[in-house]
Image (cartoon, rainbow, N blue to C red; front, side):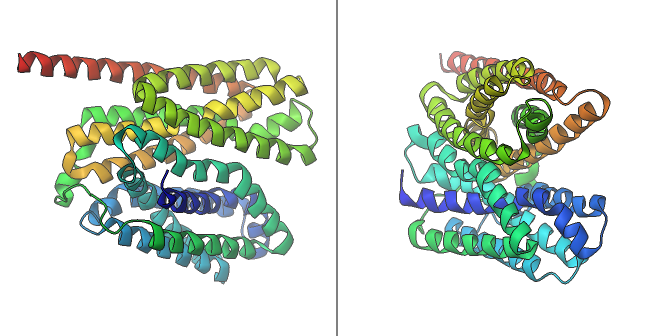
Length: 395
């Protein structure tokens, strides 16, 4: 893999850290800025809003810009947003900082996916996307605990300062390593680019992404609580378990990308969704037994984010066929779909915890992942039908 991909991976790590680290800092921020916990929690929701808006809309508006310089501009906005968070005098200014950073996040992952595919040969596209997204997945379970630790010991502002430094290193790496003459899709008008929203095949992929990714987060959102309350692990050890889980996630992410390259995204996603649902059901039964729970969690990590490269490369493939003038926008909407999945998964998981038991999030998550499997197989059926129609027309 070219060195430029590692610059993208570091950028993804910094962006992933700043997105999720706020969860661990909410009590500290609420206390420091004298706001309620629900108000501090809005910093998570508004960031996600920035991602959801920034991904499709700003990607469409920046369609004519050189990909490398757009990438550098996005990292500059990311650094600015985190520096504003570091210097924020109050709650309102922190909200503005978070929204700005979310805007950069959304566009980065939409164009980052297409940049990654342009850096490698056709048969390595999913692996390239997987490598880039490894930065995000590793951030979930390494950068976030580290950032939380920094915030708790040196103040929450210090966390944003450190993330800004990471963003600066990533930006310099991109400026040096990413080629200036990257191929990009021909630009079109904003209205034409947003036509992806009326393409049934793309909407189906977005549903696969939101449901498949969201199913994981029904239980993942409460994994630490399950490990402590159901499995009986002391709170001091859950951080280490999450760290090891992160290694498993990174391996599974790369493995998922290689599988998508080898057998195609639909087949790879089918196997991954089926395995993920099985592991979640298994966790429902093994959670009360510490060592069995630990082994199951490691298996879970291997499959939990293995669907990311397959989903992202699949939406690019469909977009190149359905809306070749708006591939980046289609990719950006899939990033928005990931965030919708996270939000819905966490919401459903919270409802389950409130009404039933913590461990019930595991089997509910499995059922939702199976819905994603059904959607995936249906999309694969439509692919075969389209290929058959093309063959008939060519006869």
